[in-house]
Image (tube, rainbow, N blue to C red):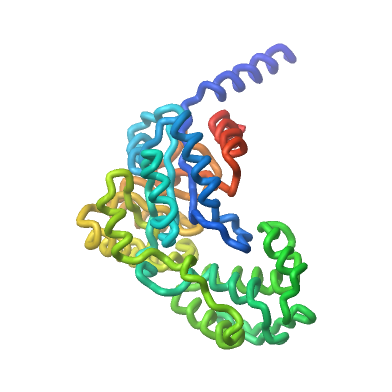
Length: 343
């Protein structure tokens, strides 16, 4: 019996090693940022090192090509696709020149409402107000989705260097290291499931409470419409849907989900002059209703944030992506090998 178990173990290991896998890598920002609890930013220096590793080692394809391979069950081993979520201006200013330098294709998933807006995405604005503002009132009373909340900053009204250092090193899901970080996470968790109009109301209240303590940097803004138009015309770049306002789709009814996906699809098709075929779910959040909606809209593939490689068992509307963190080149290369070998 032990011999049979050992045989099965080695057979499993053998098939795992030689199973055809490809990777879809998920980026958000190519920027140096002071506080990044969700690890959304990769520095331009490290991103260039990533592209050097990829150019020298792996064949690169678009996310649309990945979706086609999944539908046709023709996974090409060790191919890699680069994707970027949301539509940050640094995708155009920092990522695009490096993609051009190394001749690497990529797909940008765009939340269409934010294009051309001179303000931050809500999660960045929340970081700025609570974790970066030098001085804040010590009491915060706020109503979110009918829930009355009261927070006290205690001695953290004035941001001390030590507290800033704790914010800079804090990575979710680690325990929030300061009272400000606790409040940030409590509010973030309550805002995530809300429609964007409700989030805007809360942000307005927070900005009024903070006063002029925080001025958002333009580097955090979404890209301009002209920048998106240039990406549409670029030979290396494909564009995909990321909904209109970046909601957590699964907590909303069918009509809301349909409008968020379809209106983004129509807006991007008007700008780009070509059909939109693929989507990345905001936060990776989706349910059966979401996938039925995607099917109704005749999209060919949908990408999640599930931390999985693509293989013969991958479903077209649940294609996993692997979040790339701010690793240097050698660390990135080791992580690619782990992902491709199923570790």
